Length: 146
Length: 258
Image (cartoon, rainbow over all chains, first blue to last red; front, side, top):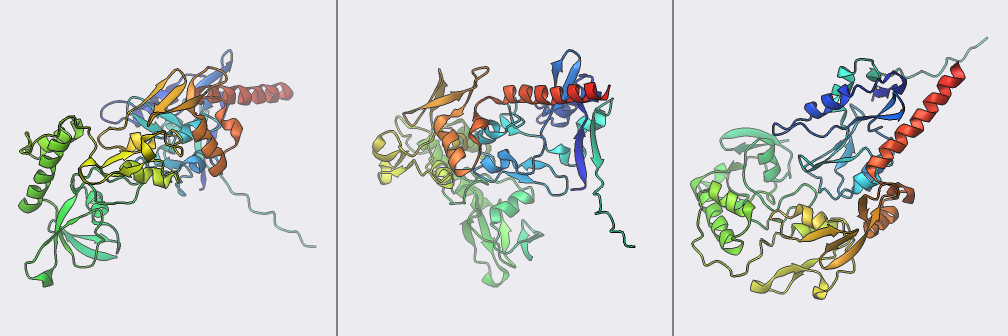
């Protein structure tokens, strides 16, 4: 997990390109999916792009009774295994940020999977409010002798 | 890792892995109704039947359900031989008589060239194929609210004594996993009805949208260690809340920077 999805809401202009990128990236059966990211206005012309935070101790993964939600150690995303998902909606109710969603078009549960390591929303964000970047793990400061 | 021969092609597999998962992984399409990743295989629907043989069997063959047969080194598996197709057609023929109104069965049968059943149709048939997917998923949840009752022709899936199942939490897993969509349920005016039991739904404190049943939330709180406050508002309102909270922090930080 060297990469992190970084959201900088003060750069967001609310253009919703990320929503389109997400919906079209997750096209299935020639129909775009529901977006997993939503820029929400909290004040006039001030937006926060709300998306899955890939929590360390995620409520969605804990609530899943069938082990369908597992962390991908390479991308750091908690991925939903649709083969195992029964659509009981426990994760939708349990996520404290409301980021596990029901896609009514494809009749399945969806959550951000960071597009398997190359998030489309970050690639299309014109203002770099969304970025997927390498985080530098700070080494412990060298102890000074003398 | 072991080698097996699948439809004439050598493929690698883990020892003890079930044949059906290898077949699916290789992209070969064979029907299977009772199979689901979330539950243990049980070989109820019989449609995933394949033919197996080995070199040393000198032409002897066996027909097995691939969901229950573990892979072993040197096994020769054929998924679409004429005999296997004949077995599948017979099973689908029987299914068509048992559940004549099921869209899934009709479509599958048509794909295999069975348009009309040659058996006598069951009068007032439901669409249940007795695959036990619902009872098995309920077992995974640790509830076992429903099971098969009676024997032989009268066998049905039902709650104990045909009454409201005391262990049911209204999670809908059984209805969702059912391959032929037999289990009726409905959400109406904040009440969910399944297996004739009524459940109160938790309504979002802000917008009133129904989230999940109170019993299912209690189950998640006690067995999955989810804090109780998480079930108070719906996912839409949670996202707006998050945006407002993050927004106010940003505004404060921006003011402090000025």
